[in-house]
Image: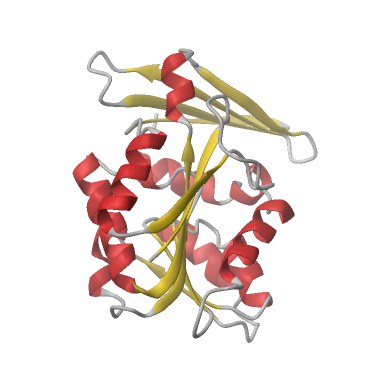
Length: 251
């Protein structure tokens, strides 16, 4: 097993093959940001290799995009090196973004892909969401997507669907193990690449099982209004059996 950053360095090269851009997800983001007032500046937190940041820039948004992993950002930058797109990739910690960007700067911020629950504590989650609110202009929109941990805990879900890309010889499996304290969930991933010679990379990290109601409460405490939960990026209303939990709020 390799360490977390080492795993993500390896994973970066295969990220787009495991998680290709979803047109449905892109349309959801774009539609929620089209009615933001006074500009089109967007912040992507946890951008990985930048697929959605680039796609939104192609639609005319001015996009800033950050990730904690240097290799992910390196690959994201390579994808736009010869373009004139208004997208700027940086390595950054989401808990320090107020040191990097001005207050009331962005019209929209999104943090998808279960990134938020990689933080160590719920206090950190509240801090991160507070920083997002600080960076947003009045009436700015925030979009947060995590896993629906209410479903995970209630049904004792231990396995997410395996992702297989046959053309690339890639198999990506994801398992959950609940810690005794129930304060953390152990998330075990295995990336297998079979290109004549088979390589396998495993990683284990601890995630915070943030519940939908807890996310709603925190967003409300920070000052977000009219927060709505969705069960999918198709716009379906949230329900207990939804796999993702998508929150959209406005200041």
